[in-house]
Amino acid sequence: MVYNPTVLFDGHLTTLEMQVLVPIEEHVEMDFNIVEVAKRLNNNSTYVQMSLKAYERVPDAFVITRAIAAFERTFISGNSKYDQAEYQGKKVLSRSEKRGKKLFFEKLYCTQCHSGFNFTNYKTLNNGLYEVYADSGRMRVTKLEKDRAMFKVPTLRNIMLSAPYMHDGSLASIDEVIDHYESGGKNHKNKSEILQPFKLTPKQRKDLIAFLHTLTDLDFISNKRYSSPF
Ligand code: HEC
Image 1 (cartoon, rainbow, N blue to C red):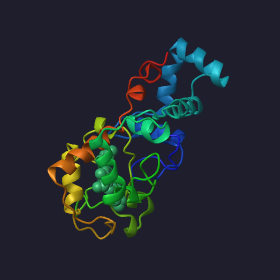
Image 2 (image 1 turned 30 degrees about the vertical axis):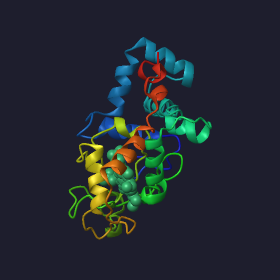
Image 3 (image 1 turned 90 degrees about the horizontal axis):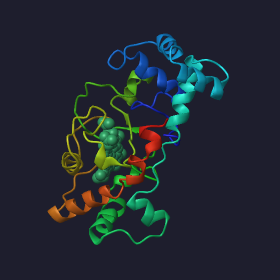
Image 4 (image 1 turned 60 degrees about the vertical axis):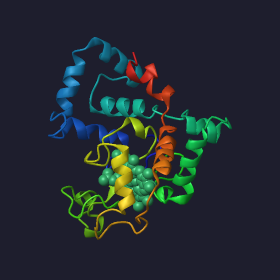
């Protein structure tokens, strides 16, 4: 998260601090409010002590937004098999994984959007999921037609652990995602021209999926600092 210039699928917030307020208040998420959250934390002496120690004030909106954002900025996934091969010079990739990597980076067009060490160019784009979207995406914020159904290009780090896929979770598996890209996507006026139909052999599909598995970082997902920080 620390590297993202914007947060949320419509890319409308620029700080993790602001993002914290969204799920607390959003009706389909916690449907609550930050003042009440602060009151509850003030009833817990552990939180009060920690807050005083870190911020020299009792829990309030300032502390809650800063503390959660600071915690999120420690989530750095950098020891997947892919990272070990790419950045630590280790020969850990199997032949199939290497073939999949070549498909991803060279033969297909995936890296035109899922680029760089975070596998995203951080832009909001349309990848042709629907002809008519229920969610207007970035347009909800800008009110501009050119932003209709534009969604942030998500990272692909740890992607094999995060099904279902896309902003609405409508694709249940990585096979469905590959089917989608193979088809070239649905017609939408904002669909990126990069997307073109292609056909993978069953072996190539297996290789591509094997490559996507190399983005799983087992150290990251089993790190106790994230699952039980106290
Ligand atoms: C034109 C830019 C673009 C290209 C090229 C592209 N993607 Fe995407 N990708 C996106 C966008 C935008 C989303 C999010 C769409 C949404 O949420 O509705 C996405 C979502 C995904 C997701 C789901 C991520 C998640 O967390 O839900 C996967 C997996 C994925 N892409 C893989 C690929 C693969 C593999 C390729 C190459 C075959 C590829 N993408 C090519 C823009 C692109």
